[in-house]
Length: 111
Image 1 (cartoon, rainbow, N blue to C red):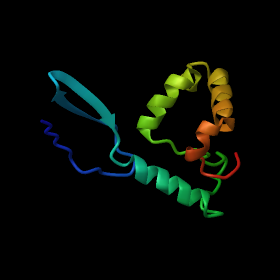
Image 2: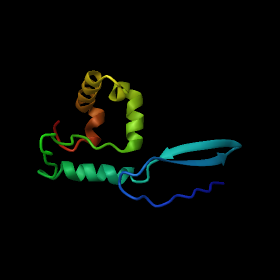
Image 3: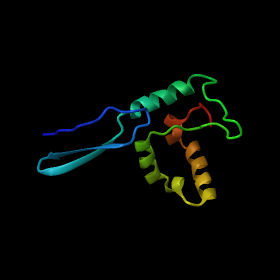
Image 4: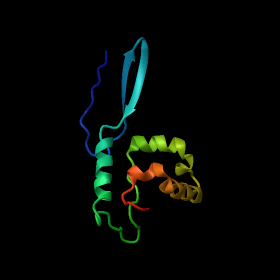
């Protein structure tokens, strides 16, 4: 028996939520992000619309949009994405952006 109370999402980038229930005498916990599919659909639409992402004055452009739950999972695969050393972190992000795993999160066809 599962009973989950879930408030509606406030934006596409809502926080990760947790569902908890008993199953076969065990407590089961599952993390989820209600808006994950909408975020990925928005990224795909942006990628397919030339000119939809513009440079921010002096800051460049946003190359990736990653749902929070996916980011938590990616950090386990690429721990240097959150490395306190800025140079190592930058190198890790560049390596990740070249990796095929980054494709669903790319705002552009080519990085």
